[in-house]
Length: 437
Image (cartoon, rainbow, N blue to C red; front, side, top):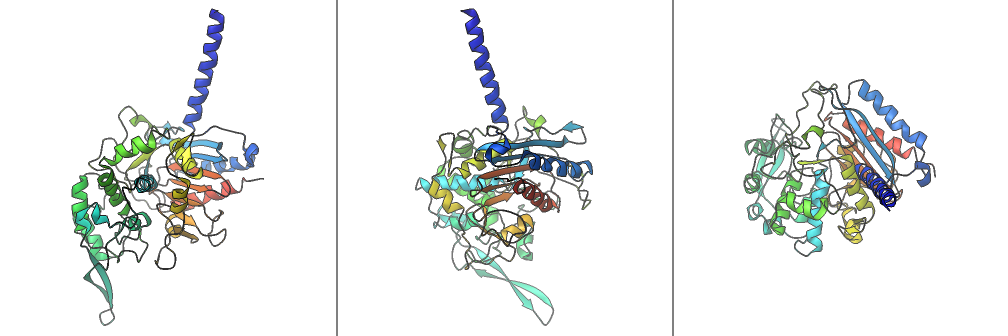
């Protein structure tokens, strides 16, 4: 009897250990060949990036690739903290910066599904301070060979859809070419020359109040420009749900998907897993200053404040590929995912710098509600499929979802280098080169 109990206990323990190992990698593993991929060709990813890491161009990186719901490639290369001599691990935690945006976009669409938000709602319905905004309009002065700016009232209010697709007229001080907007963002504490995309010290109400005093860079609904829109969207989620953004996401997204290491700060019992950048970028020579995520922020930045692991984010991407559900937990409906991954720019909205050019240095992508969306198999200078969608983060992180090929892939590093687009393209082409069915 005791022997049977011991044997039964061993079986349960073994099963539990296998389950824990599976969660640590995000999804259950399978031989690449069983889902139409080549193990030998996938190994090229590690070979290529090991060379870059050995040359001191990257500190370290974690790569996860899944096809048809099965993990086919999992690799951690280099250092979590090179200065401390600490090797990177598959459960290392990364600042994901703009890969926070898709998480908050999903949160907003949950509230749309519940009828608490409509995409056509003016943002001022939830944040009254955003009602009457002015636009900083550039005008070329040919006589003096200079550009001047004038303030004009907005033709219409920005909507929730504008926030989701980055057509609100808002801007980033780090990116915009509109001089008065950049200056105003700096004075408001929403743009800092020392640490990019860091406004964690402003309370939510204060952030909105200050942003409302900054002129818009464009008339709402006319131009695609990457911006503070997702931060404002996070404030809309809070207003519509009555909950702090971090709490809403934890309850409605992270816990159901078993994303246990994802949030807006790293607790002290996990801080030893936080990945660090190299002291300076080897290409530009500039210091690599990243946001401090060791304590709870004053506001949860929906645009750049998230932290996560490769495994956690892989589960998020698989949920998206599955049409809004994973392991029996439905987050969004299939129709909502289809809406989010459709073209929301069309021909009416201009994009002087397209989403693909910003992210990968290549055209071929439009924008949906929280994601860049591939328009066709051609044009883009990287392999992929029509309908594929993706985004990335300032510190080098990257993911994409390809419904046609049933591929999801996540790349995590802490390297805010100007050549980060090169590494995203490299990873992507090596994954597609491994398809052999």
